[in-house]
Image (tube, rainbow, N blue to C red; front, side, top):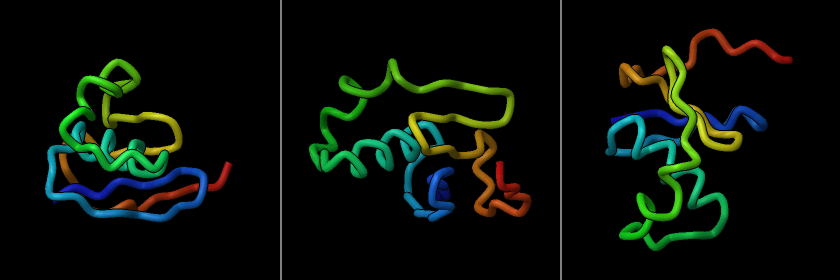
Length: 75
């Protein structure tokens, strides 16, 4: 299970996917795209990888799969 946070709204959604796949799914679904078969083809190149996270648009997941966002700080 992977938690994905919308960094704009701080809403957390949980997916039974890897952290990279989960962040792609959250981004795609927020855009109204429910065609899961094509997520990798359409969105993989948009994923930005940091030391700790995968991000795409406003969505982020921890690479190590942790399920909590304990330290969320407003900008």
